[in-house]
Image (cartoon, rainbow, N blue to C red; front, side, top):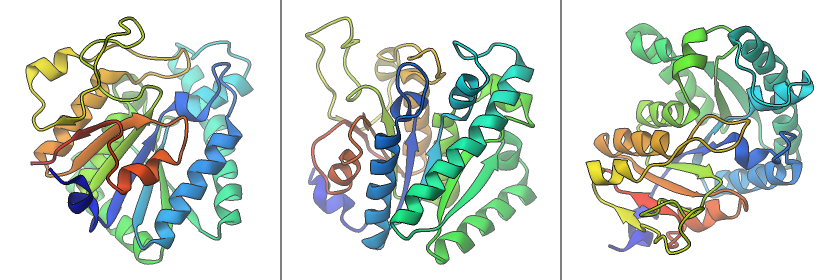
Length: 264
């Protein structure tokens, strides 16, 4: 399979960054990483791509601002952390994107937004209008108003839902590991990277691990679920290590990095 040929005409790309990608292990924001992320997205925009960013991190960042040592367990504490953290995140994103002469918009979504036909259509129309004006939509779950969203959701699934809604060409999930492996690389140094997955089988699902850092909720299992949803809707998805934002360009240019899940 020639990946460069497959990707070269892709127009709409959804990129999701996890909490562990844009924060340090102590829970504070990694400003250098966020700046490079905004730089890479801006460059994709300059190449004529539509880019939507799904950003985790609001609860994690807000938790630190409120003095929590780990991700809070009480729903009310999570909602307060999300409210504080979302404001911090958006201010920082706006500052960095302004440096690269691109405008952003904030969209907060819940599961019911996708389940209700009228609301789903309204969201789709909003995205279409924003993208037609060259805006970079930044998406997060609306944790401050929906306990349903906090308790049962994750931004991997949110990103996949957005990609399907937009009929995107590709979803990129940036995480803290390099790819999907045949076993946990943090435990087994002999673990082998899986380069391409043409079908999400039960065997692939069994390779998923557990959640990562103390400030995040998503693990490999949620990413495999997102990959299956995207693949079933004809969307390619890539899992890759987000420690260097330049990997986004390498993925879009068809380099052999991470794990590619082929859309059917």
